[in-house]
Image 1: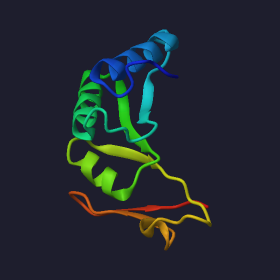
Image 2: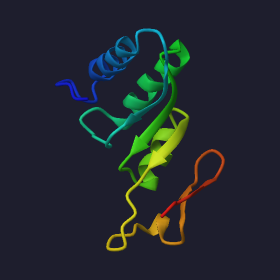
Image 3: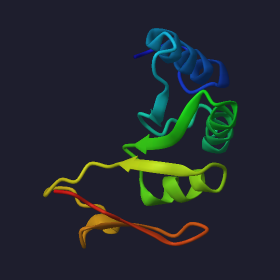
Length: 116
């Protein structure tokens, strides 16, 4: 799903509103995941907006995709990140995934298993 407002507060609200209207009240958004870390809007602002959506009951959890451990640590300072999707490639391993785990040192250190 794409909109011209991208990662702006208005764009995030438009995406969540559009998804919820497509569900017609029969289901809810369990996980809303930003597809990429785009810095046009500060990540802290994006996470605070998404955390507000959790508090409003518009989404259940926040996820991130195509992100580094550094970005997840930064995001987790502003909102509870429940899911992380990363690319694991034999040609391009990031240091945080070389041992088969994605390590995040957040408020409480978290190890996520990397499935291959």
